[in-house]
Length: 389
Ligand SMILES: Cc1cc2nc3c(=O)[nH]c(=O)nc-3n(C[C@H](O)[C@H](O)[C@H](O)COP(=O)(O)OP(=O)(O)OC[C@H]3O[C@@H](n4cnc5c(N)ncnc54)[C@H](O)[C@@H]3O)c2cc1C
Image (cartoon, rainbow, N blue to C red; front, side, top):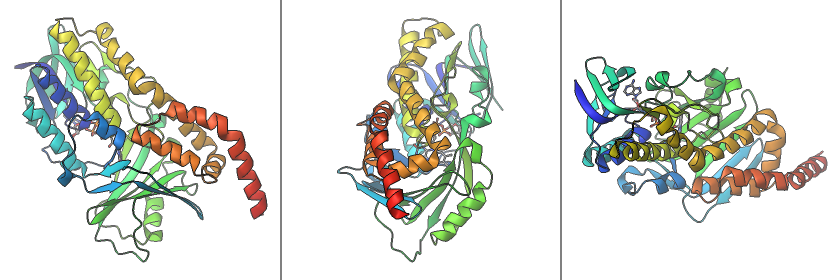
């Protein structure tokens, strides 16, 4: 049986960042990943400027496939284009990006064991016992960063409810031939029929990432809606269409129990408005490592009570903001016509929202901004409708 200070389960952004920080801060750390890296990952690969700012090393240029400072939003026959002075997102391939993050963890001294699928986590009295299909590991603390379908989370909280998960399908399409030339930047299409959600086309090297995300209540007909979208845009399905869930952040859920911390999607930390999860995976991975180091270095027991500081730090750092994001996204879910009408009648709401990806604003500010401006935006929206009629 191998014994460590910390076992990190999962080699995505949350796990890789947590393992790197733990090892760097002197803890004996092992990262267990069920796949062999690089492994495919269902993700559009958009990394916001705010997420990049959380990494203390720049992403190597060869990993970055495209940089975007231009946003094109579409809703029916309306279009809004916003050009920012700096890039608000970069596009990567998740297999390559995650491999880079794991290599940083390894360089910092973390042991990385691939092909180790964790099947059970047992918080015993002399440390946490982690079983994979072939081995048993023990540690003083386990960081569960094994994604939205987390095995570690079973020891901490009830499974996510269907209504707490958004659903996305996506595909990467190579050698694009299209009647209309590509516009620089990201394209996001908002729509109401047949499903309420948004579709995206993100540029990558020699291909595009395209997909469709929907609210929890609208998961029927998603694949058909996505195929219709591709046809409409003149895109032929190249590779596989993959689907995956995104936990709606902002919902209050336990993220710790005796000897266990959850980070990233496993904890439910993703933006319910945009679906951005990498930023919160990195943020929570770092906070998990800081908590682990602070407790273990002074031999404080990593029990539920002492680990509570992690939940509080996550709440102050981004949780309260995800709560505001959830409120705004619920408004869009229940009143899509009014909200989209308002957003597409003025450039300001989109410009404000993009600043969140830049890390210059947060959802609480957007919420206050909306409250203050809603009467004026609604007036403008209704008077425009009367003129059109
Ligand atoms: C279609 C789609 C598109 C998305 N696009 C974006 C985007 O453009 N930008 C963005 O910021 N977010 C996006 N997201 C969300 C983003 O992918 C996640 O929020 C992010 O990957 C979470 O990181 P993580 O480290 O918590 O988990 P993951 O990245 O899911 O990593 C979990 C790791 O744990 C491993 N694992 C799982 N179970 C076990 C086990 N039992 N034992 C050992 N290892 C295990 C997995 O193999 C994986 O490597 C998208 C999600 C979907 C579904």
